[in-house]
Amino acid sequence: MLVIPSVDIREGRCVQLVGGRPGTGKTYGDPVEAAINWTAQGARYLHLVDLDAAMGRGDNLVKVAEVIANVDVGVEVGGGIRTVERANEIIGLGADRVILGTIAMKDPEVVRRLVELAGGSRVVIALDARGGKVVIEGWQTRTEKDVVEAAKEFEDLGVGAILFTNVDVEGRMTGVISEPIRRLVKAVRLPIIAAGGVRSLEDVRAVKEAGAEALVLGTALYEGRFTLKEAMEVAE
Image 1: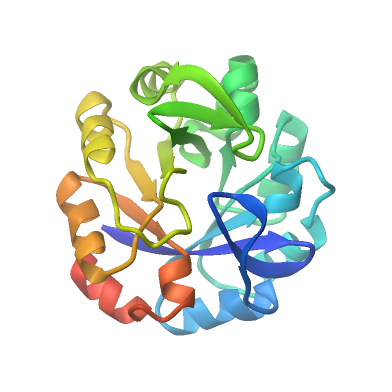
Image 2 (image 1 turned 90 degrees about the vertical axis):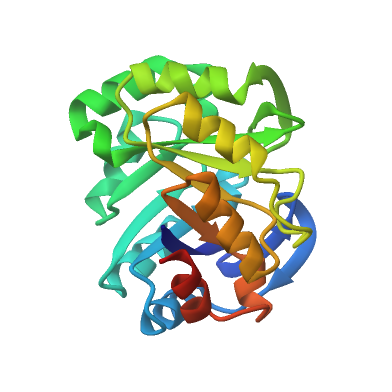
């Protein structure tokens, strides 16, 4: 299982929020420095999120470009990507793949077009869930769409992977809930990237045993609950 450090950007700074809510969590300095630090520690891939764009409060595109330019590993980028044009712009900056969330749920045609233009392997769908239902618009709006149902629909569109975040535990370090991950792994053939709730190496092991292909790590890494090297050793 691949371990992917998260670099979340809000107002130009690296942050980790609790449940995606503004005003929560902590700030951890410059995103470029954070990204370079994780790659120096052995990260083979990075998860980069523009939180301002996700919440419709401007963007950090310049900082996103700076991060990509300063690391030599693959980077997936999400947050506020709501048009094919913006997705292509980010790919043009050097992103390995883009993550679509809100627009994928509101207008699946955008997903279909992007898969055709960029290739399915470069498109990841973010299925963020609260209470088992998909939430959108920076986790502020709850839909009535079941996560597994949505995953199957996007699999049919030819996307490359599903990013599943359990918003109920995201940023809280209360422990992973592995059953929803296991359900997704069994329901679709797509690689599942899991995120949310990790507090210990046991959680890393639980996600691996649930069958996820990758795990995004945020707060637990930044707070020093364990090292990236330790997490990678468990994941392997």
